[in-house]
Amino acid sequence: MTHIVIVGAGIGGTAAALALLKHGFAVTLLEQASTFGEVGAGVQMSPNANRVIDALGRLDAVMAVAMHPDAAIATAWNTGEHLRVIPYGEHVLRRWGYPYVHLYRPDLIAALSDGLPPGVARMGAKVVRVREEAGRVGAELADGTVVWGDVLVGADGIHSTVQKHLHGDQPARFTGNMAWRGLCPGEAARTMGAPVVSGVCWGPGSHFVNYYVGARGGEALFMNWVGVVPHDGSAIESWSAEGRIADALGDFAGWHRRITDIISATPRAMKWALHDRDPLPFWSRGRVTLLGDACHPMLPFMAQGAAQSIEDGYVLARCLAEVPDPAEALQRYQRNRMERTAWVQEGSRRNERVFHLSDPQAVAERNARLKAEVETNPDGVSADQSRLFGHDVVAGPLAP
Image 1: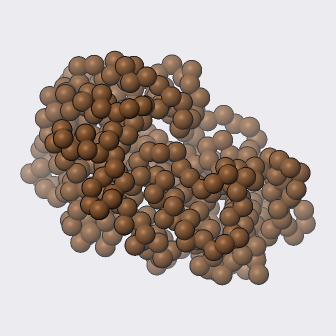
Image 2 (image 1 turned 60 degrees about the vertical axis):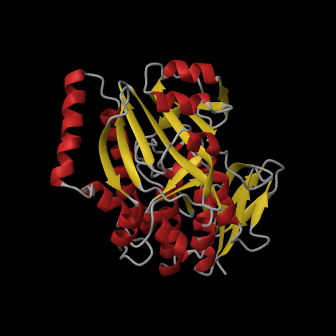
Image 3 (image 1 turned 45 degrees about the vertical axis):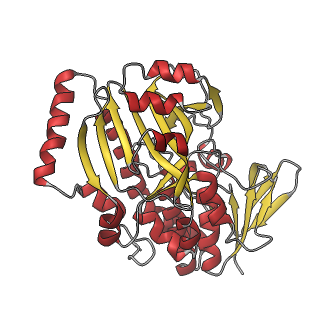
């Protein structure tokens, strides 16, 4: 039986392990942390990702802890005026067959990892080097042992050890932005009257996103929020650099009260500098390949980072199942994924520019265009949204 070694047990690596197991492969999933887990924050799962999660047999587990937003609402930063309301809920479910949901990251990784058979995941296994020999590839661990397999997959994030093996040490691109992240208690957010929507508020050079996560009996544990502001880049890429609530409030001084109330009700806030990369020239070489942030780190402005990594894993499993030679299968995998993920990367950069307009005339034109679309496109479905949500890596055709 072909043995696949995956480095990194985040959302993408765990979903890839499930997909490969479903397609009949032996899998070893290596994770440097001592337990499964994601740093506590929110993640948005769109229909294209939920279609894959269903194929992996984990949809019921994920939906049990998911919040279902009624709409996506864009508002003005200083007044709270609604600029655009796009229906979600049943509208998305009817159109694409799967819902758009919000999740607490630890809930999502638990729902996925609970589907792994015993012995697949190896925790506390820090990979320090990739070893290649004729007919096999290995992950060398910090203790000197080597885990050998027929294929090695780097799902180890933006600072990927496997990516460095393929491309050398190429630092990620700092974007000039920093993101605040916080989890406001759900009860506090409900007391404010915050609706169950995917909210985005656009301001000069900055924006603020908020949505409920952590469903428990129909109520949310938290209101997840992300506030993106300009920054000098002194912070490193991290999900866990702690900041001060007072500093977050200072960055959003003058924004409408709902925003500052959410920040004020949050017990602690984290911050990290936002990085991405230009699309890589290749993902696969020989028996080694990449997926997720290891090969296409994305800014959060299309909410597709986790979804695209989940798509990656399923396409990888299909290619390895359909092409007998591992190296040829990995080339087919990258041919089927690189164009789509590069498009999402560029779309995320483009959205950053749209969200952060500062020139008053440009802002007025953007806002007027959004309001006009209510008449011309009442359901709010854009061509980009259709291209994202309608993509089917489970049953759709793959390029040769």
